View 1: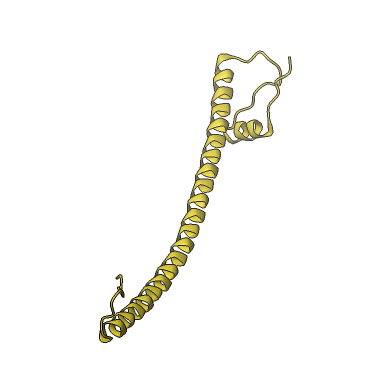
View 2 (view 1 turned 60 degrees about the vertical axis):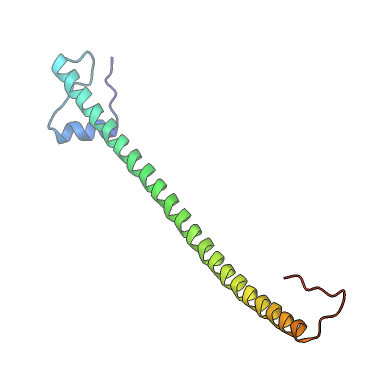
Length: 113
């Protein structure tokens, strides 16, 4: 039987200075070397996936933070507008109270504050 190796497996084996026979069966030492190389490849892929997931997570957090910041600014602007409106209405109410209290009290007239 033929031993099929991926390009990554061939590259790692060459890095380690190991040559495996192209036919099976392999010796125990060769099997250990091949398992080690395959484990390295799996670990490398797992680390890449982990970094990718972390980046996606951080990008999502940054996006949510930007959206929350924009919403916060909008809400602060709305609060300022409402406070301004509230002050204006309060001034109008005080002016109305002042005008009505200066007039002689009329029977049947009541101001509800």
